[in-house]
Amino acid sequence: MRKQTKLVDCGSTVFIYDYKDRSDIKNLHFERKNPVGELTHLKRLVLTNFVDDRPLATFALRMPLANYETAEFRIRSFINKLKNSSGHSSVKYLAVAELPKVEQDATVKIHLMTDLEFSSLTSTVNGFIANEEEYFSNLWGDCVNIEIFPQEILLSIIDHAYCQSLMSSHYTSLTKIVFKSRLKKPNILWNEEADAFIKMKNVFDFPYHFGEEMFDKVGGFVNVNVFSLYDTSFFTKELKSRIS
Image (cartoon, rainbow, N blue to C red):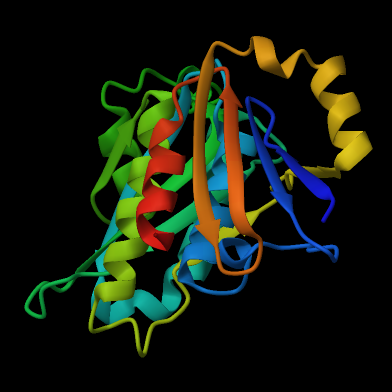
């Protein structure tokens, strides 16, 4: 059986999967349409679009569970207000809703990542904004918290929100928990093209490396190597724990 190499380029992080199989496999089992696969693709989008050296703003938006059917409209409206306040004509965003786990809890928390730097959030607003969170709470219509998280924290935030929503009793009726726009997809390369990319980008010189062998239901034993400019070991450790 010949060796296959699949490389997933997420910008600051590169995933290399080596395995042996008789036929071409476009997606390993953990990448297919199942909760683990959807979460894997979601985290790759985070790495590709929001993990770099910029101090990007991440919002925690709260809203009543009873009004959740308006979430997508409200997020789009909020993004338009962000465009106006920042002076940016376009904004990349990814939002994951954290549905309440406890039946009595009637509040949804929406984790919204943007490609806006914190310093530019109110750059076109007239007058001095003493409290950005209060200002954006008024625009959103409910409580808003704004944070600048370290790169490695972003993945755990998405992981927690997504998994808690899947476990929520409300998920059966409110199945849309991810909202996104204008996101760049990871670049996927195979075999010779993957090898050429590794040499061209000096991937093996990235400061962080995580290597592991895991068993996949489709690919069999797979050698996983993650090379990153930042600490993303949480991604692969969590993935391995879920497919083992």
